[in-house]
Length: 233
Image (cartoon, rainbow, N blue to C red; front, side, top):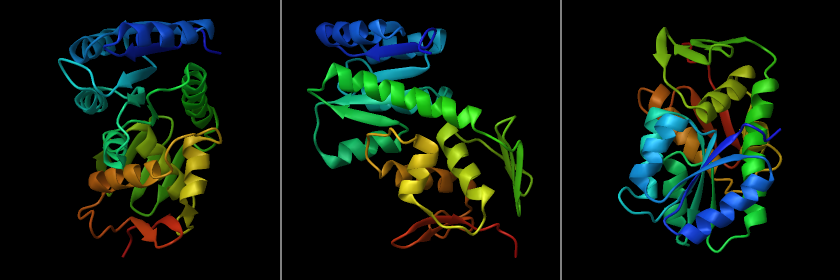
């Protein structure tokens, strides 16, 4: 299942790139490498990888900025590598759109397992879509076209934002725990920080809410999780 899946490995340490590439190559992935942020962006635009293994501390353009630019231009999965241990750095990476992170030093086998899990949950979310069209009040979701409109306005959502909204819209008013959304959107094999749900919900609110501080659609149920209100008066 890995044949043909393209992975971009970005790290300024050649030994790290070669180690990661060798483990991914054994699993049948097609691996391309970049030693700095500028080269990574150029390769991402031409090669269109399925997933980017992205070190945070790289020259030319740092990893956080590369992540931000990638998210504005395309939507590959992103696994960040960082030597930093501060919680703020991890959450900043997640907030910019990273799907998961590993702290250096890391096990190459764990990295491969996380890459597989990220790609597997992405594939299962695509193949597992049953309905082709959802309507929840003013929200209309076309799963085949990956299109969302709210009161006639077209929304520009990433894959993860789209999947979160689709799951909430499938059962308006139902409260989804963070754990349930992790299971349904990120999959059973997710190893990362569960707060990734909160980060993506916050990003989604900024796109679909008139006032994200007082959301009309995605409501927080304190101590439990999130639910979708239809927006109808």
